[in-house]
Length: 259
Image (tube, rainbow, N blue to C red; front, side):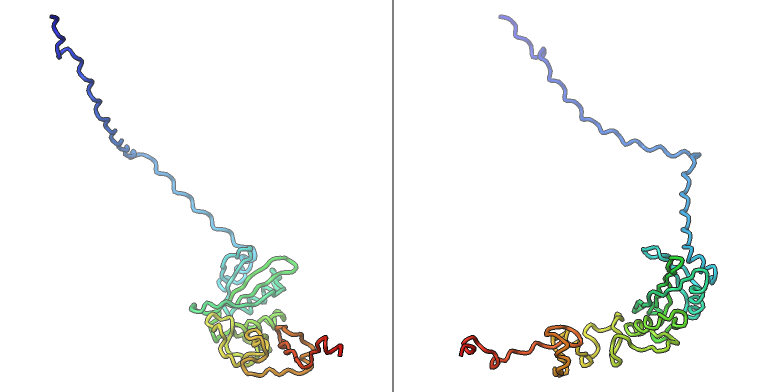
């Protein structure tokens, strides 16, 4: 009987591969002691001031401060109330020739000191450049009027006074221009009540916007014949009139006409 092959001669199973070892993190080499450090970035040069601003600050120095430019590239400067007349006179008559005052307005910051900025927008017709001038104004103090420099400032300053209450010292006729003389408060101030300070002061036009009739608050809706002829029914404005109700007694039907 042939000898059976011994178990020792059987092939041994292949050994399982050893688990792959994760390579150790390579330690960063320390920087050489004699390595030259990276040069620091050079600071960006400050932008040159606008030529209009440069001319103004060159003339008045610290009396005028540069506040940059707006989104349209118009330069903005600030002057104090004590220097405003001198600065504005030079802006009109000096090298910049800003001979056109296009607008006067104000900005209410409410909690800032000073509370208001009075803002002037100037334009040179011949040189085609613009300038915005700001002047701080505390509530109840005021700034000098520019009527003697630009006559157009007359009504522009009255409008700003009417809506913001900012005083323009030396104005020849500083009074309201839009609102009635007995109006309470200044509507463009940020603390002005949305419903108005006194509903009894509503005019006919304001009452028409609110309720659709003349003098709804006072109960007076009478209108004379001349006003009725000048105004059409339903027109909101100073001469608005409600459409008169149809009188059934005066309305004729087709049957009545045949009789």
